[in-house]
Image (cartoon, rainbow, N blue to C red; front, side, top):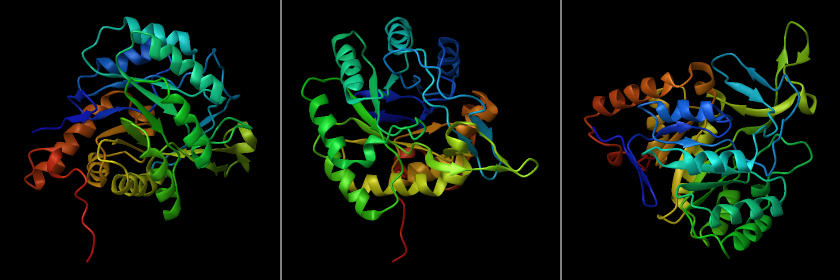
Length: 312
């Protein structure tokens, strides 16, 4: 059974990988994801130019299983140089994604320029969608700002580049962001980042469950599946065929992976459930995905990718 994927000139023997932010802050965590026989790749923690501790704890909370999680991590990471050293020296047959998330446009441009001038030969993800940095808006909700930064980026950047997007909730916004993205030679889009800003309450103490931002944080896990499916579907219908899609959000079972592929995802990232189960989750999800395909007599993901049916 063919459970592979393709982005640009990169082939992925498995379509599952970690979502940036989960199991990827340290070299040990990155190694662990790469070592899984069932991971197709690894995404580095979204890097800022310098080491960043992130928001104060508690900043992550596991909600009941049917809901997922809430977090306000605030981009904790070891800094751009740490991850660049890792990707330049790590020996692996798997493609690697380097994620950058500067707090300013100049931060992003500087990091991308350094990646352009380096020997890094993987894929680069420009994170335009972190909802958990106090005082910093999500760039990708500002369509003019998104166009401006991509115009500057592609004036010098020649390596495979994609963008990580926030969830969109209005059909007009799907049209607007696609009109921007289609004007650039993007290799992929990653949708969705967590849904900000949610709030959860501990019924025993009547307090919020995380400390930053008065308890407001990004939602992930089961609760966001419908939004993730809608974003993958809407963007697949609007984006150039050459722009591949990484589906992220709401994955707890192989059927969830199947549904994201059915909506048009080429790869699928796992966040909350990876936090819960650690890297063995990749094997379980791939096995369940294979069972879903087998039940319908499919032999490959290509047979279902983007083939979602509508009611006529």
